[in-house]
Amino acid sequence: MASLKAWLRPLWLRATPLRNAVLLVRIYLYDYRRFRRHYVPATARKTQQDELGAWLLQDKHRIEKGLSFAQVKPHYGQPILERLLHNLLHYQQQFGKDAYYYWGVGAFAAYQQHHQQQGIATAAWFDQLIAQLPAADLAHSTARQVGTQALPQHQLKPEQFAQFFNSRTSVRQFQAQQPVPQAVLEAIVAIALKTPSVCNRQHWKLHILSGAAKDQALALQNGNTGFGHDAPQVGIVTSSLRAFSLPAERAQAYTDGGMFAMSLLLAAHAHQVATCPLNWAASLKQDLELRKLQLINDDETVIMLIAFGYASPNCVIANSPRKPVADILIVHDGASQP
Image (cartoon, rainbow, N blue to C red; front, side, top):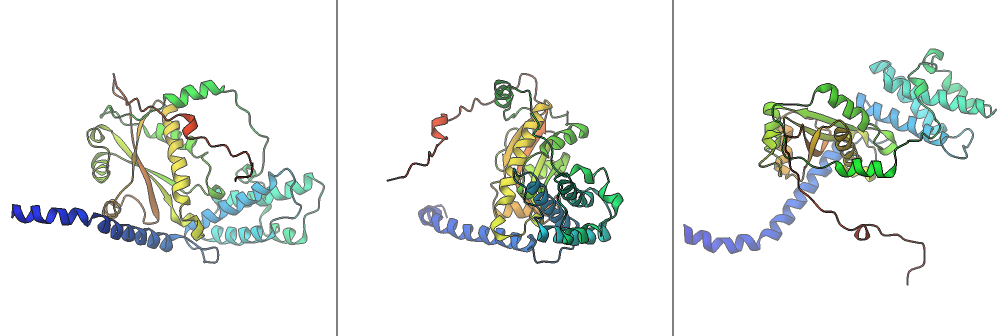
């Protein structure tokens, strides 16, 4: 048997490129099928609350964005506002009047207010649309959150931010019996929600696990050996594929999700909470096994895991020196290339 294994090993190693190529195709098809199953084309009928909510946020933001231009075009956005009203009425019928509804209504109120302030009469098509919304809803405090404001200024000096940013690091020594209180987790997420996202759709989720669920998730992650068991909590950062409507957005879940994860790390650091980002460079089997734990919905794509907790006394960290700026920054001055 030993001689047979020794004879087969070189063949097995030589077949590695072929095995990897087959695996790459399998993973590609897995990702394709998941995106195809959950993304919601603009022409599709939207029936789920998260689908409709994403479209309300998207179209509301398109109106807000137009109002933030230096030169605002009068009477712009008719197709957007028509679709927004259609989805608003459907959303209200199915799910009632919550923040998503009022934010959508707020786009009409802000649009109307802008034209009034500029002394421009709104178009007849807009008057017909806004007439279908109750005046009380247009004046609601949540609806009034929508619109524009003066650019806020901060008092933080660059060197102060650099000191804070550079003091954040990955921690691998935790106080295992001291979880982060829910109120602190909520404060961290509240800060991270300021993260930019495509059309302001805010399609992220943060699932916080502890106990057996934490251990099961960490067992599927490559990179927490030797310290993961001491982290009192682990978060799973995800993006919902239901927030996307175009095949061209196939990578947007990871782009937006990665930025959200970085915001979580910084917000946690501001609250003296130690973190360690854990990659989800997972195999097909690992991703499927995580979903079998029924911790996340099928439409959620995993961005990464994050260990949360408080650093142990006398904790040490890896130095992790950084590349020179010159290796990263490339400035193109517009000069023609040979």
